[in-house]
Image 1 (cartoon, rainbow, N blue to C red):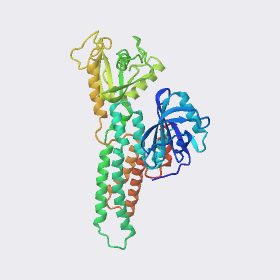
Image 2 (cartoon, helix red, strand yellow; image 1 turned 90 degrees about the horizontal axis):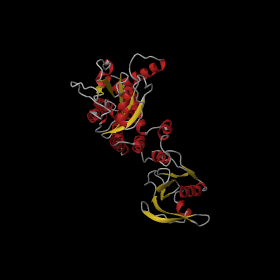
Image 3 (cartoon, rainbow, N blue to C red; image 1 turned 90 degrees about the vertical axis):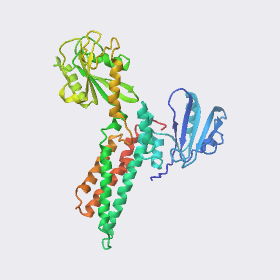
Length: 439
């Protein structure tokens, strides 16, 4: 694809920083095999592991015993010659090896994401797979891991590549009707290509109509705890997160800003937020907090609307969020309303398990993914553009062939930008900047 030649050989710690039993130093580039001569070791055969003593190149001192792995180009993660040193994870050992490598010409410490960037540039991964790798590294729940792994293994890329291949085929046939206009070309050819384009459009439209499940699974299912002041919102947040995140007080209006807790519910990522109590504000600061609460409720995937069972009059769920809210009655240790579905007491730990089970069902419905789902707004934006171009063709079969070809070419380019199979230099810095050094 790109097959750029990198003159520099890069190196970095590829395992977690800090003291550890084992640390992995990764070296990749045209002079990676120089590691053997530098530390007076024989490199093993490709993809074989061998134990060796690392010897200081200047004074002959023994540095450490290490496991050495050699990956020969192009059969490595980066597509280049690559050596990995698995050493003991003490700071002094790592610092000494890095100082020796730094003194070598054409060796440089890797930038964040540089190994993965070279893998992309050398055609080992496409951009969607690169993003899947980043998500896998950052995955905190089981279903995040599954989605990220599927993406890294090419599940999404294969779908987009299939569509692109079909559209390129249609484009080539339609361009032929222009290039060889003097020849007798069956009028059915254009009609057949339009039919194929409509099939892709239908599949793409269904893919876009996914209720944002993939993005929600990647970023987290957002739950807002809301209601009037003193209904137990902060107590519930603290109880669910099992730590004192929010200040709990009998004084109304204590919570002024939104407070978040990050939970794993049944393998799905959940961000649960305590908000300021909804009432007529008594101060300007409280008013700002209430406005923030209202905004967050509108944006939430689910709202837990808390009602105080110890009082007779409660504010009901606002009409605009009714379809995504659960009514939760609190303080059941003081008073119980028998006719209410969900009644809890954080003080007595009553009803919490039932509430979590109910929340879990909402979360699973909102995040559960079977198949290939969009995981990033970048993908969605490109797919929407592709859909718009294909829709122009599908809605008007009477368009000139030249116009159809232009729309189809634009659709192919939009689709190809997702995987990076077009000129995407402007995307590279954005995609690789969040990678850690050594990856």
